[in-house]
Amino acid sequence: VGIHIPKFGLNRNDTSSISAFATDVARAEEVGWDCVFLPDSQLRRRDTYVLLSAAAQSTS
Picture: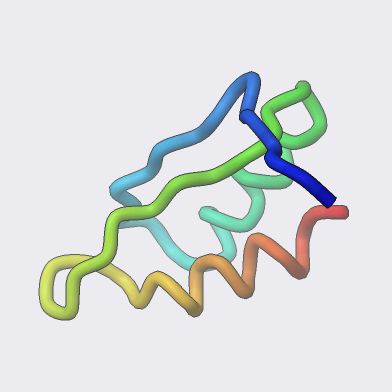
């Protein structure tokens, strides 16, 4: 419990497939990145919650 200050973060404006995003996030975790940031928009990009769910499934 407490505040987690990220050391390295991945900020994505993703236009690739959901599986490609999940693979990229897993790869980022393997090399030491510790957070992912996604912009949210209803019309311009893939659903944020779908992408975050895919990232959660592919990381620890």
